[in-house]
Image (cartoon, rainbow, N blue to C red; front, top):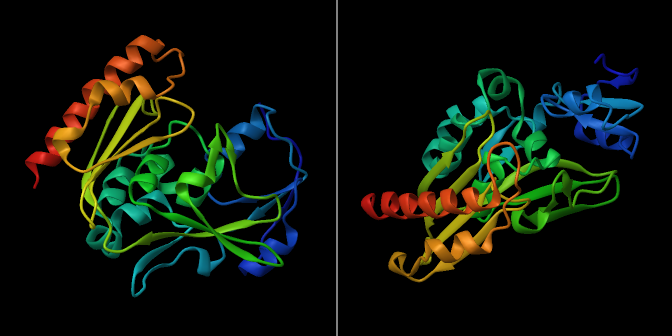
Length: 264
């Protein structure tokens, strides 16, 4: 289907972009999800705000206690960045596995999480890394933990007049493994298993349900894969039934735990 008519704005600063945003004027970066939804008639904004020319949204910087990733950075950019590789290698791993070559080159990390596709590689890992997202409106700035940002399928805590400007990952970031199973472009089940810097372990199961499910453990031997599989709420679809997805979840949690144990 052809795209519906809309006005395209091309601001040069985040402040100018924010001044344009409302319920009918949406931010646009890579457009890999947004434009498809518009073609399908699922959303009909009157205007889009092109963020690609805003340099401040494309930077990746290292602070004293956190890694800041501009929301406009493409998946390929994040995957290949030296700072991300050194300080948040798990995110670099997941970004290399996103979608296909076109999506990784065109899509942005901020656009991915704002669209809140339930089968997102990025969302699963950001929850595991205890990341926060930085939101800015014309009158305020706020920081929202990734665990609170995703509210449901295609639904986040971002308000219509807010722009997601960056993703903040506290340092030192957990090290771990990211495994997923898929038969189509998006994962059926995704599992991030990390060793927490303060001690203990975190397992996050994503993609299988509407929201990632996270659990912390004092020891890897305490991880109960069957219990985690029972806690997720799988969405039955063409990639599998609820029973099948619970089984695959249990298998991949066990594999992720084994891989994490073998790497330490």
